[in-house]
Image (cartoon, rainbow, N blue to C red; front, side):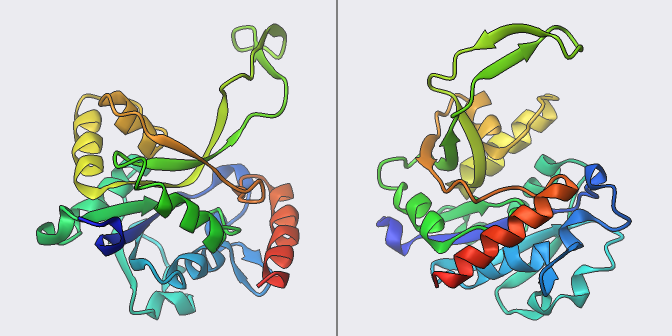
Length: 238
């Protein structure tokens, strides 16, 4: 089947509480300009013409999502997420109509990456031709890498940055294979840090697609100001 005719379903795991931000509310609901981080993230996905549906995995006690204007968008559906990211993504995959899973692609994106551009989504979707097994957005490592000694802050060695990449999102995989490999890995107690790691564990080698450096994840308070700057620049180019 031509990839242009295959459905793309975005999955946004948003069940976390973002403890590292030190905020009183989950970090995805912190204000970034005139709306929340998650609202910006959803806008990028909802407005992309090739994304058919957006499934947001929420904490069972989430009381914020319903207040977002994006919550009422016809493309948006929700599921109750799990304790870990992989659990949330799997629950979203399970909620997809089984009859269409065969030809669907899951585009998984972090809730706290609000600076995603349509151009990066397009690059990832176009990679389906050369990477039918799936691919992720990533950035080649630019800085010198150091490994610490045990759990200390003392350097034990310098690590070569050759062939090292920073994994970003979205990460794009066929729904059926991602669901199967996530499920199998979780059943065996494998630590899954992102969707690509589940595919790698199953023997699949995902493709790497160079993404934009401004596709940052808001993790610490200082990231908010940086994200606001990047969003301003991105919006000025539209």
